Amino acid sequence: MSFHAKKVTADIVQWIRDWFRKNSKDCNAIVGISGGKDSSVVAALCVEALGKDRVIGVLMPNGEQADIDMSLLLCEHLGIEYVTVNIQQGYDALLASISREIGEPSRDTVINLAPRIRMATLYAVGQSRNGRVANTCNLSEDWVGYSTRYGDSVGDFSPLSMLCVREVKEIGRELGLPEVLIEKVPIDGLCGQTDEDKLGFTYACLDRYIREGIIDDPVAKAKIDRLYALNRFKVRYMDVFPYAPD
Image (cartoon, rainbow, N blue to C red; front, side, top):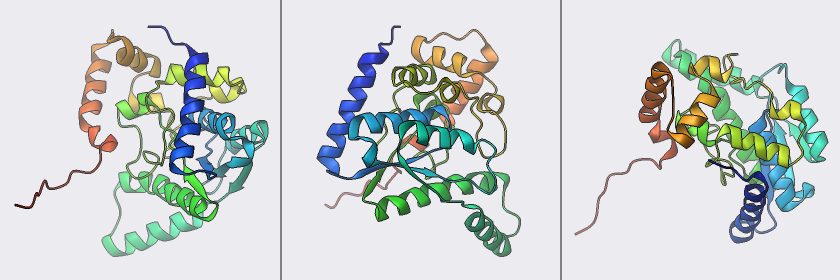
């Protein structure tokens, strides 16, 4: 299946322009900058669509972040305004308060609290700076639910949600991003593992399965199918009781 990066890039840029024109004329794009390919590509697309003066990057380390230099590289490369909001004090205080009330929280609670605080931070910056929050997830992550519900899974507009990892990388190159940002090994930022180590299969394998329906490893296929089925709720609106007045 062929992918025309130049055309798709131009189409996304126009889509972002149209979205802001219809939904939030003159607003800024608020992008959480992690230093990885997805946030880098989204920020670059917003710069192309709106101009660098209407894109605000938000860096949100939880204490020390070993790869924060990649986030700074991206902001400097694009020439965008950025702010750094360290979430550690809020994260630690909230986790301690929860622990006092319910006892030791689950591992998933500890892992997912940070991205939920980061999303609250993005909306706080957005509401204070006339902004709309960009979602930076891609199709490959959404396919297997590799995101935090009401954390990095949400936003006001989503440029990459229909593009798999290999396509996002091609768009990054079309936009002229530094190769180190495009090929940076993705780490979840939550528990220190690479995405692929945690998932148990490669993005190349997942992308081929998504786009071509081909997968050679039956164990990987079973994992992908299971994650897909378990995590569909993350990309749906919440279920509501279907009450209709008589």
